[in-house]
Length: 158
Image (spheres, rainbow, N blue to C red):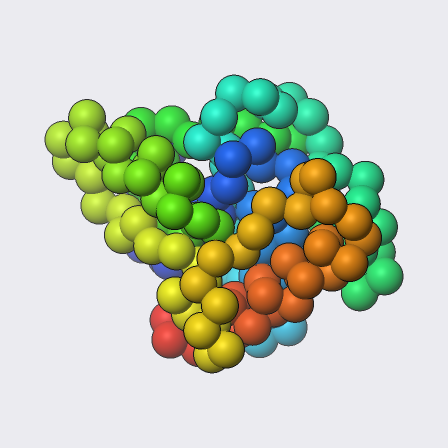
């Protein structure tokens, strides 16, 4: 897909079934409520191949349902094209960041700015921990962090 004239953001985590689809859904809802969703291309992806083709984790879906945030996503892996077509690639932890930076090295004409989503957290919680082996409370914490970070990211790019 060619780069559009609008803004674009790709949220990334390890498997693309917990943190990144939550961030994508939260950001999409915020952009919709702010009346700017048409100006954005919003997606999420994985650094790994573990969950390709799978739906988001049922605990994440339950959390999003509780907060009335629509979430439909099928897990996919980051592609070379993503580094060329997205303006921002926002990831969840240091492992995602090093994987993305390593993959980006092989992309000649990349334009994506690769950052931790947590860099936007007003509460300075840099890392959004993987809730996969955790509890419903861990998914709730991911949701709250994504809310804060996405709000600050949207405000800094509007």
